[in-house]
Length: 200
Image 1 (cartoon, one colour):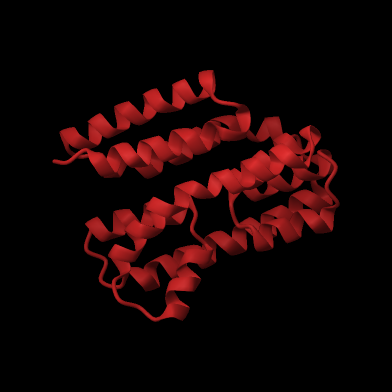
Image 2 (cartoon, one colour):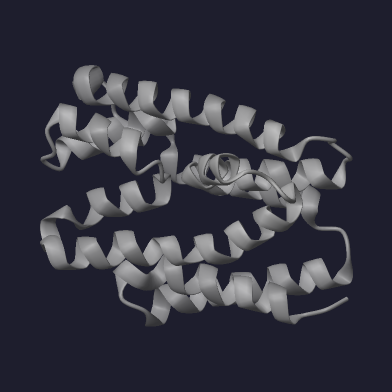
């Protein structure tokens, strides 16, 4: 559904349908791609800032993922890093807590499912999406529910609740203080630093 919504919105914002699909094939980042659509009208400068800035949160995510999957070949690590999304990262983190034996294989399977659904959904939205109303899909609500669903099973200790509370405060402050292109990046980066700094 998210892929369909992106395809519809990207075409409505002026991207060619084929270029919209290529974006999902190559970028594989819902946050960056939706930011791209939202900032297209502002010109290439803010779009470049937004799409590159959003990748900053991948630094702590990739470091954590490396510690979870352990010593793997370069080919495996590059493959796991290429599809580094919040969704499959959250699922892999949860799997590490429930005793899944091969986290690299688990994440690769999750990545394959997400990637195929994302690209095929984008194609549907881009080529036949004129009959689809993105607002009717409830995307604004679905994004929040998605991330709550990913985060909720991971919150167990007082430290977790403290990190979540501070992350929420950072997100609210980011929307009030930072330019639009840096709101997600700023909140995510500060929240990741808080989570790293606060010990049990």
